[in-house]
Length: 264
Image 1 (cartoon, rainbow, N blue to C red):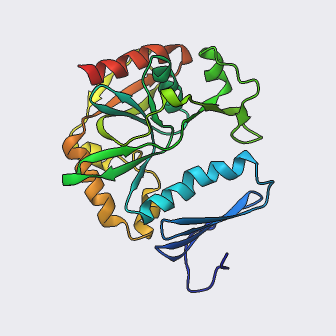
Image 2 (cartoon, helix red, strand yellow):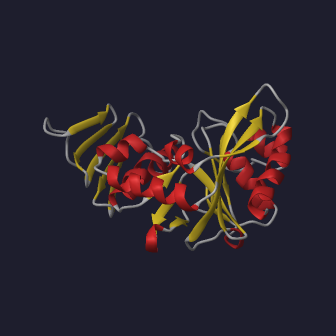
């Protein structure tokens, strides 16, 4: 793996860019990653190779770099298949994207991706969602609320009570599918009510939480790709902002509301 030199661009203390097609990511005490040409990833682990933390960064920041190098756009969202296409649930970490996706999978909807999904611009810039992995990441309290045992499940990181939950092949969609609806979650601690607000295309494409590692994409020369993706999404995909009461017990009702939005 090449060493960082003075002519490389420093995006952050952990990410150095030799060129848009050659990026080094160094996570202290976990691993170093070399991402090249959208086709190759070299991993130099500092932990045992089976350590979950190595895969955590591989399927986050490294996956995002790989996507941008290939002309794909990673989205900070979980995605499930619903009538008409893919339902994407986005929002900052901790708002329940994975838990809602798990609830919808339990109701018979197939998982497409959890936490980070991949947007491809198809013919006519039609937004298509590519599958990632048949796996969900659930906090222990969310798993318990759904009566899912975490015994024997792999922890995402040793210091976090968050677990990788495998999804059966029959409950996973492995082919790309058109984006049908995007829901942006926002916290609501002042009211137990679930409120829905339809966003205008301009507000939707300017929303900063949907596009994963957006500033990194710009550093990799992906500004034009992001612009196309934002216009395509704002033009053809309905986007709704949904308030989320600060209560795990409210999530089943929130899942009902999600399905009502896409079947209406």
